[in-house]
Length: 507
Image (tube, rainbow, N blue to C red; front, side):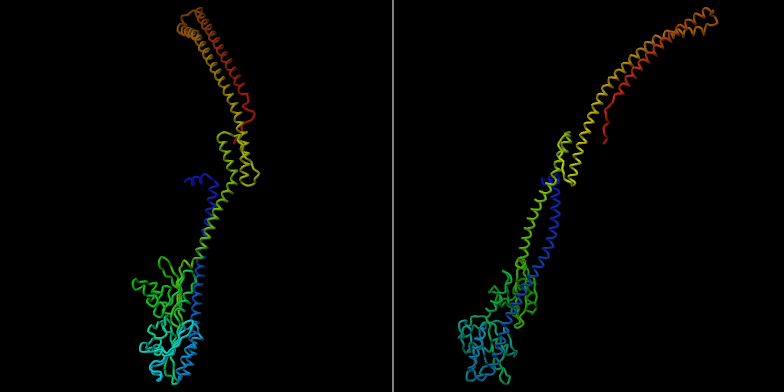
């Protein structure tokens, strides 16, 4: 609340507030647009990066698978050319491993009793243990290889086929401790009859290493699904071969996972967003053309947008720092430029209290503030002169009022004296007038009975009293005339005195 009151009272604070508010609004709009397009750009770049890594992994794995198929095709040709020499099969089986270090094993297996001298079972098997290559003849009552998927499927389809990863736990002799996937194709004799199966093995650990190394981001991981959705490669080894991508949906329906699983085992390519554990994951998937498997790279959204989040934090820090500097700069500059206004405000406040001699700062600035200072300075000088003239006029008026009061008292005294004189004269005239009235009335009533001598006496008496009244009236008129002339002379003297040398200026 104190800040609000301070902003209301302070012009510099108000200007700083509006400037910073406008700049902040522009910053927010600019940053909003920047963050939007940055997020889109980072997302597209991350998706492109993940897609490229997925493509690279696929190309590398499919290149290896292609090399395996080529090596198997070449070896098949040799085997069919030397189909009549069973012992050469051990040489061929060993040779293909020597020429292809990525291969884990090779079996050249034939139909039961194809070679009568070799008995019911004949399969030349070689295994690459890393340090050395071991070769043996496999097949027995415990391991009837011609019932195995790698043998039976290729025979039934009569075409090359990549089988799902498996582990021959019943194999005697050379112990195989790896899950392997085999590329199998039928061996034909000169009559084009299937007489056996050539199988070359790739260790699933090689797939796992190759696929799990595809990590475009620190917390991303890769998975490999078989044709039915079984996990062939997964960071959680407990899921391998025992769970499918649909397993989690059996207990709790999950439309997102079901949709993803169907797309992957259906041989589709693309990406899908999954929501897991309060976080979104981007899953980029693509199938292998050779095997029908599908590989996916799972990337947490936090990893994808980590550069964007880092950019956002840096920009927010820079923005806050910039706004703080802007506030400081605005307050400093505005206060510096408005200092003359504050000084003028203090001067105006003192002038409002009656101190017109306060020092008013003048300035040589040519802007609006300089003009205001100069105008205020001139106004102060004008007001000072005007107040001095008013004071002089006030003193003159006070003096004249005093003189007028004295003259008024004198006039009142003259009126009282004149009234007293008139009353006195009036009293004196009453008797002569009464006498005149009585004589007049007597003559009017008795003029027929009066002699000339009596008439003359009455008339003389009337004339005598008439002269008395006339004399008294003249005295009254003379007294009134003298009083009027004295008053007129006093008023003339008062009006002739000047009020001031110069009339006050009018505002």
